[in-house]
Length: 472
Ligand SMILES: Nc1nc2c(ncn2[C@@H]2O[C@H](COP(=O)(O)OP(=O)(O)OP(=O)(O)O)[C@@H](O)[C@H]2O)c(=O)[nH]1
Image 1: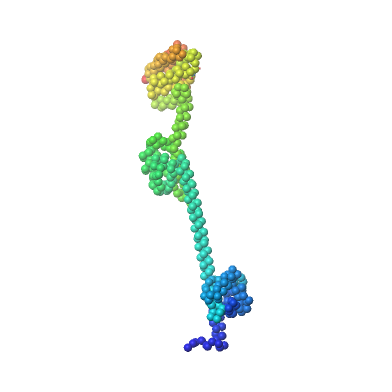
Image 2 (image 1 turned 90 degrees about the vertical axis):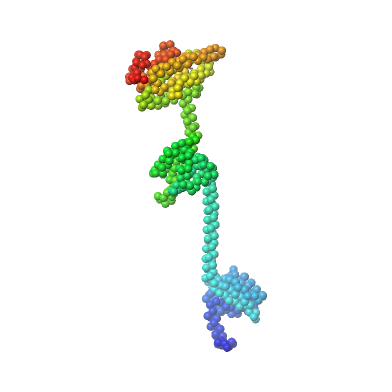
């Protein structure tokens, strides 16, 4: 039994037309040779072309299929017709206004020849697919970019690390929790760590582990760190500290601020080993203060030491003796045996006199054949004895030039702070005055200044102890 009217009647046709009108997808029938025989009215909702227009078209494929898909579609239809095997594929129809409409197409062969086509509207699914594809493509693009930036930033980091490892400044970066974030090789070298050490993550690495072991004065250094960290300055002053092995290092530090105002991300420390620089400058100073020929301190250093020792004596209420001496008969050695012979006399004299003086006494060559000796805390008698010893030492030295024996003597002037003078220039003048008298009195002797420290007038007395204001 069937609910449908028997086919062939007028009602049949009307019923079939009603069904066809209600079908939302497109159904079509092609005669052999791909001529469109019938198409459901639903094609109009999809493309804007009425079913009648489609059937009347000379080539339905030309009218309904998008140009890009037309050859493919026709080929598929021919294949179904030729091979008798159904095919399913996606296809773009072309609407009257030119826009593309995606459909899922099924082509089946008909028993009597020709084809049956069912096409389902899949525009929404396609749009979702496109959006998905675009999103995936965008994600891939982002991923590729991220990888590129990562490679670039890794390269950049490598370049920076290579640079920082090459420079001789030690670099240490610590975070707000005092943990090491970065250090370079020079930092390890300066602080005496093995070269392969990794301190990243260590807390107070330098302060706890190294400072107490390697520094000459760890307490002073720790105090410096504490005051620097407490201090308000964002960049600290240069601080010099000494290692137990004699090295001299300076440090400076800077607070590193984060991007947001007021946020700190840590502190950068820079260490510089200045041992060589300091030694060189000390050597230069030393050279500038030494007499080239004898190696004794020169006039410049004499005045510095005189000022320093006088200030020291004044502060302690002590005394300072000055012996100024000048060779006698030195010129004839130059004249008779040449300048080189004179030089030899000066050099040997410096050695001999150097042996005569004590460790706290300093000998200077302040001119051609003029010398000076500064004697801290020298008593009047002690200075006199010392002066006589010098006179004797010089007089006893013998030289042989060109087979002939030669010698010099020395005249010495003695002055003492504060008895003969209260300041440097006056003390030198007092010693010179005594030296002058020693020369006048026949040379090869020592004389004591007759000046009084509390008056500028020159005293006629040659007795050194008479004007002395204190007991020795
Ligand atoms: N060889 C040598 N001679 C020097 C040097 N510096 C100065 N003289 C000489 O030392 C001499 C010093 O002169 P004087 O002080 O008159 O010599 P002197 O014979 O000791 O005379 P009196 O001091 O009066 O006893 C001069 O001839 C200078 O040219 C030096 O570095 N080497």
